Amino acid sequence: MEYLYYLANASLTLRVVQFFHSRPEIPVSFVTVIHQIDGWVVRIKLTSELNPQEQGDIRAYLNELGISYEPPMRVQMAMWSLEAGQNPVDVMRRYQVAIVSHGHPEKKEIEAFRQQFVRGLGYCPETLA
Image (cartoon, rainbow, N blue to C red; front, side):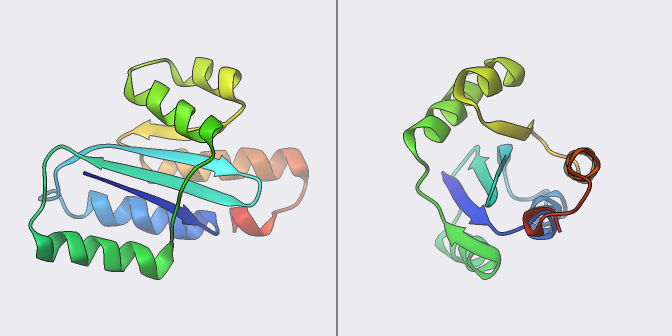
């Protein structure tokens, strides 16, 4: 079972990451966080099925923060490559996708990405707020 969502900014992405960190009873296999020019893509893959109530609760929470996402083929190929165990740097080069984190993301990884990006630009775009 997996959830694939598009989020508008870094703050919402951090909230999703924190949500899954604060609920160890949810059997998370991995979380992939990808930054795009106009937003963020978060894929949460679970190791096992949840009961319908838990599924609904997670989906409701994610729907409050973002929208269900159907990625373009390039992003889908990048996510499949990561899941197959390929090196994130190689996947970024091959598919031209900014992979912020894959595995069990920490808040500090996303914040570090945001700070480096803003420092390079000299201003903070809306998606990094």
